[in-house]
Length: 115
Image 1 (cartoon, helix red, strand yellow):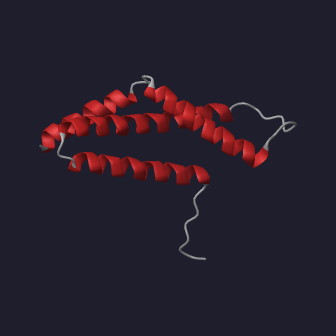
Image 2 (cartoon, rainbow, N blue to C red; image 1 turned 180 degrees about the vertical axis):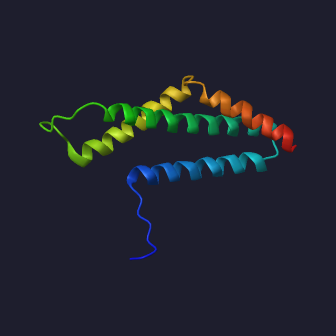
């Protein structure tokens, strides 16, 4: 099985999220409508911030010791990951931690340089 690349679920999710971010970034660059650009820029910022917050929640949750007595196994891990993603999405939609604003201003500056 030489040449095969095996990713952990976390690595796969990070790669998938990075690809999604790149697709949105490219679609924002190719768009002609300024109003549409602002909406797409905001969407990029929200998605990036949501991804980052989700990662923070996952890492914080991993510091809590598990007893094993009431462990839900893979189903619990899957549910917890989905819960963290939704919590992160809500946090970023309600103002977040400032990453969205940074992405917004940086990409607007990039557009001014390119345009």
